Image 1 (cartoon, rainbow over the protein chains, first blue to last red):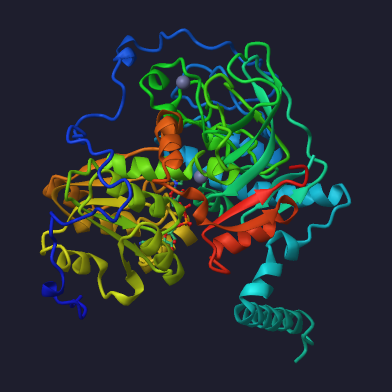
Image 2: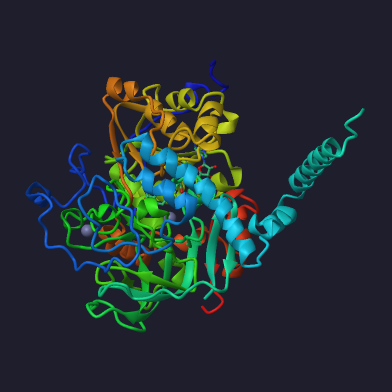
Length: 173
Length: 383
Ligand SMILES: NC(=O)c1ccc[n+]([C@@H]2O[C@H](COP(=O)([O-])OP(=O)(O)OC[C@H]3O[C@@H](n4cnc5c(N)ncnc54)[C@H](O)[C@@H]3O)[C@@H](O)[C@H]2O)c1
Ligand SMILES: [Zn+2]
Ligand SMILES: [Zn+2]
């Protein structure tokens, strides 16, 4: 691609210069912060392997899928939404593969999409019809982006009308 | 209780019948949330880009609040304390925590050994419910939660749980030397803080690239830097070479991550088809705009799936890449100092305050960058 209108001589990459107008300029300067040196407080404990004194184990009362790259469940873990239904079965399958494998991630992406449908079924079972307008936060689209909102609604309406016409067409035509 | 409830990509709501969190481990605390934020990272979940984001999860990893219950082994905080809670869940005992890499704790995330534990950030970071709720379970309460100093404004405090230390670490990882030219990709809250912090490390020039003029205007003022809108540039890499004596910047920072715009193929593969761990356009520009032997610092978040990166140029140019989830606890004391001295004024970034009940609108506004949104704070009704 050919360059834009900027001319190199418009800019000077000066290293010096006065920065006194910037509050705090240089206060955390650290010439020794050489990026080839890892940013950690080096203790070399990892050399000893997985031998540290572990925190107390949180009781495992739910199904917790854990990576095959570790031998155990960590001392603490989240208990949100244990695997369930078809999406859960797919997640169990995915966790047979390492984090280095597509076998792990692609099924999880699929499980997430199926989980969304399961979520809708679940809502309906509880007598809750999802309010898609509210869930998508479309009130603010109407408020702050009206042009796009109107355009999108018109396109959606036209598409729906098209589908309706197609479905209700007289087959003998 | 009232809490955000994820129902699928672009679909969330606030439900009133969510179960209260419980103490599940002796080192747990329960925190009554007074403020939580929506982060650029939450958008990756909201757009369905992070695998194992289960329907029914509550998001939110940037929050402050009052301790209302503690487990039997909690000694560092007590009921009634007002605390800020780093977004990393960290045990303080494993080899990684002991080396102050609190973003990589090995005792907080069963599902992935690569990532540490994070509040409200999918099962890929541990399966915890987050803080966009009235109450939240906070594990390892002896390690993360930090009492908010009396003099500190809660709006500043909530930004210390992620945004401020993350932006600061982005600059820190750049290994900036006095006089260096630093280019920051992204003028979201993280890029804004990275630009501001670059000066503290003695940068000679700080340049920010984005496509949203209102954000560029803000950062130009807030961080006193040069700004350019990449949609007006034919090729951002050529442009940066031109304005840096043709050699490139000393340090480039990726503060954009998986949702980068600016390249159709990357957008298709990374954001629409989900064939790679996000769109890598900003990282691509960073690698190609940095000087030979330069440093690329990545705080932009990407998914766990492989992503396209011009790795050949990394080799040929001898670039050092440094990247991390921020180590909030390591940096907090210094960040508190910088807020106290007035060097950093985080709350100026807050543009929107939204009742937790309207969380869906909050996400929509932030995701679509409506109404000149930079940072959104959610306020629970009980706060
Ligand atoms: N490493 C960590 O610890 C950590 C912590 C918090 C956030 N993050 C990540 O940092 C990133 C930024 O977060 P945020 O809250 O500022 O998000 P944000 O969505 O508010 O900001 C992202 C900005 O990038 C701009 N942008 C898009 N494509 C670009 C490109 N090609 N070049 C330059 N700019 C471009 C957007 O216009 C937007 O202003 C996200 O990926 C987030 O997940 C990382
Ligand atoms: Zn965040
Ligand atoms: Zn740890």
